[in-house]
Image (tube, rainbow, N blue to C red; front, side, top):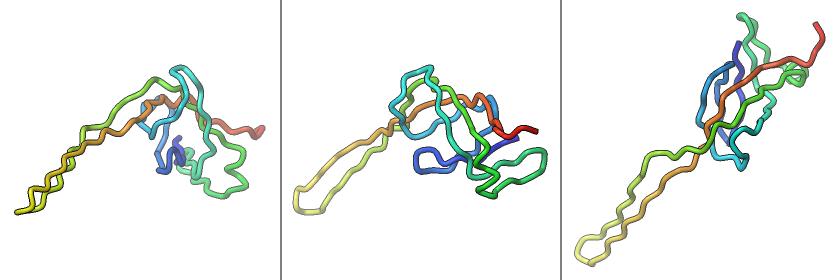
Length: 106
């Protein structure tokens, strides 16, 4: 069973016990996050109807913060003496998916 969830402006495929790196959230390590899935695949059955998905929830535990690779940006113009050097390192949060549950009574 897995679910597609919108986390931080991107769509992520989440299954139970997966460790994922998502865009930074302001929660502390050990906190619990909950998302409503956009799509759920359960034993080959694809659920994408919004009314059925409202009963599902994906929960995850925050493991900690992480950083992406360093990106170097260099701007240069010939014959003018213009050089500019910048860098960027994206901040991420690592989460472990703890469950994909349905609130419906079966």
